[in-house]
Image (cartoon, rainbow, N blue to C red; front, side):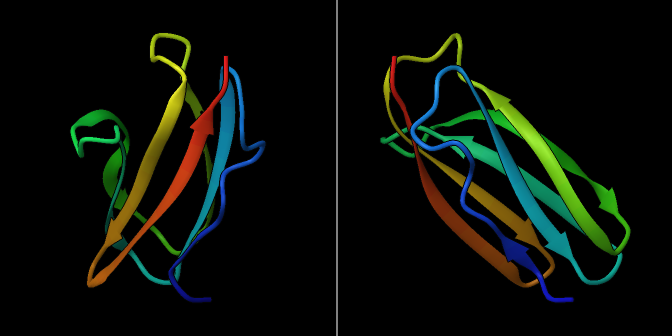
Amino acid sequence: LDFSLSQNYPNPFNPNTSIRYSVPKTSRVSLKVYDMLGREIETLTDSEQTAGEYQTGFNALRFPSGVYFYRLSAGDFVETKKMVVGK
């Protein structure tokens, strides 16, 4: 098991999507959502997590249509992916 961040599903979405990720060892895990200007708009998780597969949801009801980014940080691992809110 390696650190990994999957593409959200469904994408594009309105208003809910699901994000999966893997953690190979106990780590401080942060998963945050950013707008096009790089402003943090939501923290989906920020906690110590044991090794395993995780899934979390994101609800974009209060955000406008457009492109957003989500970033997983855990230990030395950082990955960012793009998602699209279509209303």
